[in-house]
Image (cartoon, rainbow, N blue to C red; front, side):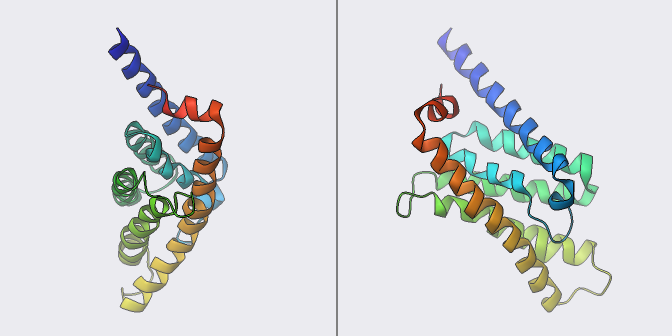
Length: 174
């Protein structure tokens, strides 16, 4: 019976996080989509620090948000970037710099910078022929948004959850 409850709790957290990701993206749509963006919902990419179920929740949220507000290309590549970022974030979950989950915030920046910025935007959404300079520009533009979303907001979210016993219990409860 305890195993069933554990699975239900994780499933519910997964679904809630997916829904929150979608709602935040759609509510802040002008900031959530496009070549230059600060997708606030990407702060949730740090939740795998608290459990593997968040990998599924955040990835599902990204998939649904991209289906509802972006292109098929972004559904594929943006969701792939988020999945890979969440997997590596989970692996870095116990590493802290001065008590902060800064290393865990870097995979979303790197994967989105490379997959979405340097590749997706450069090759699929550019009005000019792809060049190394254009790929670098797009990568930097995406990285800046991800740094704000993940390294600033995401790290703050993790710190808030870790420092509040009630929130910590909600996010880590079996």
